[in-house]
Length: 230
Image 1 (spheres, rainbow, N blue to C red):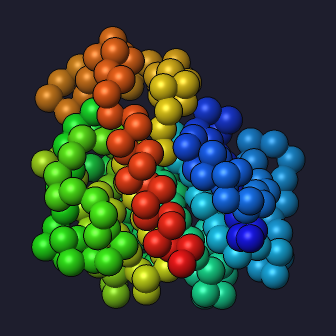
Image 2 (spheres, one colour):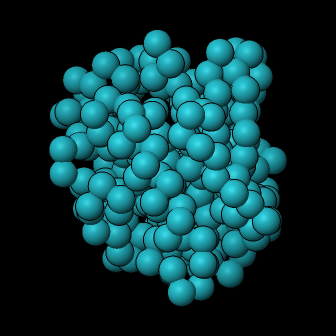
């Protein structure tokens, strides 16, 4: 049984399908919810760390007093040899604590858009059950440089660094494999001001009407989780 600790930045970006995987495999899950009174556990109290998304940036330390402590905790977890997974903002936080620069991308990327494996991604055992190109859900305006010592796994037309793996145990995913129809509704409801349509931002209607990608993307994420767990 794995003891999985999860950091949440906002109530509307939770574990999604990961919660079902945790439950069905008999793993335990605990939370640090940064939008509530909170504390971080000791490194001895968990095996995996999952860092979820949120609308803030890694550089917003003056607005979010907990960011510095969170970054220290993520770095300690990596240094302790934990399996660490970051999604969207979580991936950006991992990139920063590994020494990479995080900054606003030239374009936001919001909606259902394709990603493709890099050459290294095609050879990565963690992705061996996953196709080379498919469509996923995006909601990000920032990007990051590839952390030193890590491997780029996926790219998109708008964002070259969509996913990376560091020391086979630390995974950053800029996109959202984990979303369900319910969680996307929550994200849209809380982010309507960002949905200014252009080539890389879809309308709320387009986002919400699309129903065909959830199941397969959840399966892809579960395949990755299984490989990290074994």
